[in-house]
Image (cartoon, rainbow, N blue to C red; front, side):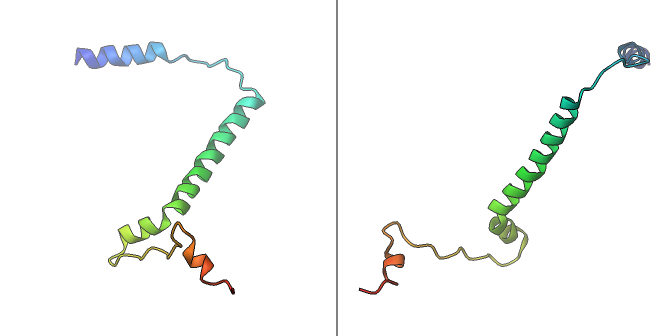
Length: 81
């Protein structure tokens, strides 16, 4: 019980009655920029890992897209010689 009273007293002393603070327009701009970066970063991660997320939440595995091999043989087979 005394520790609770001490904790409440310390919190009461740490918090001022009035906050005489000035927030300039740059602060609002920085907060807006951080919020936009968080939203766009989240959307990018979802876009990047969409197939893995869908296979994680679905019952059947989603097949990977077919990609040409490193030699580029898939692209060269479509050419006329």
